[in-house]
Length: 382
Image (cartoon, rainbow, N blue to C red; front, top):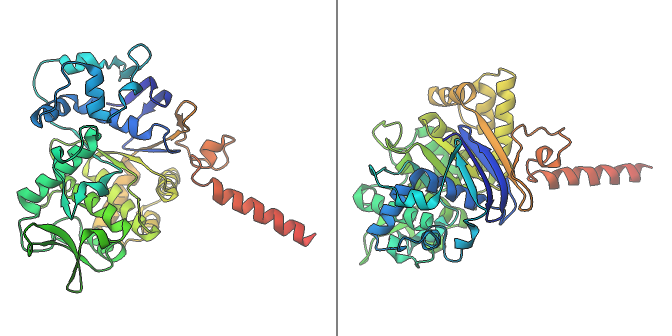
């Protein structure tokens, strides 16, 4: 899949998305970003989604509206108007009823989606089962939670050592940075002392339950577990059947230094061969994309990128930066909620279009602060 074009899907009036190796969505709340991300998942994994729903006892009785409610969530069936919604994927029409009724070889999941609701996937420190959610909860939340539960039950939660850090899981440079900047030296462990297993933070021997973690840690631990699924141990580059990764608002709850660590993780996913789609409200992510594009344009080596990421020039980090600069392409789209989705990939600060110049509004306030203060200084001097 290289291109999606659509009209009239929920808040989205019109969209023409050409994907890069990393594609970034920015924009206001309720502007359609999550809907489009879930649509990408549906396009790539419709067969696996239908099969998973049936395995867990859900039945839409052959009615697309029922399926849409099960997939996008209760009350969301109306986002898809059979008369007005048009979707093409690489110039081929995507028709939901035909896709759901199509028979043939079963396809495995090819896109792994980490939703923005990830903190709710842990209940009392343990991933919730698919059927633990209300019927009307979005499919992507239930499925992500179920995948974490299976990950814990099939190995990650069976050992005596720490869940994080783990030797062999992620490169040591990334592991150390996560440990320092997100967990402050604490370890993520499995507590077996009670009648039910739970994930805890071990801080100098004291075990802290889920609800007393920081907001950033509660958001990050499910994301970390999802990354474990994408970054297998034992030197395996990537999960064989997965080619796409979607992460909604990966920066949630994190301090800027934590977000910088996350940027390195995102580039590592690219290096491993995944195509990555991010939705974000973080100017740091857009600044990284902008800076990387300029470094490519200026034929710069890996050192400036490593300085931006605040990582040492180890062989792993240099190879990571070199791969991203030489082989990866970035695209950025702005969702306004009242207009067509706009390609702002140049991120040119001198562009006459404010959506481009202000990185989809993420730098607009900083620009306004500078302008207001400059004007105040001029008036004071006069």
